[in-house]
Length: 104
Image (cartoon, rainbow, N blue to C red):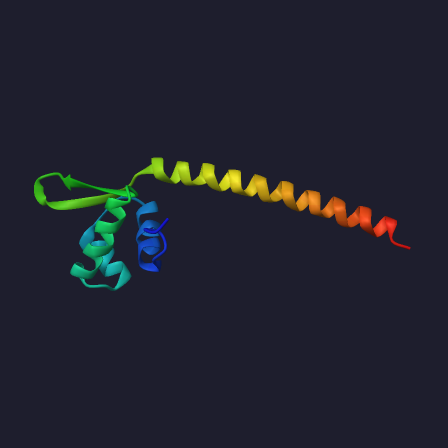
């Protein structure tokens, strides 16, 4: 969650949803220097949200891709939270409706 708290990192995630990209292309799309973006990519890698793979013939070129597992786990947790609050709000609605009927 901490890795996703920063708007720049969320923008990186949005760009990577379209497909793998090299760091330079990400930096250019976000209009950020390569060293600054590198710090954000390091946080995303440490959080397990993205991975870097060497790209083909040039071992220096790294393609960044999303890792789907953490997002699936996050979605499962959000589904549980949503179900909890839907149940709570449903109970509250029933309580308000009962209270209104009992009030003269």
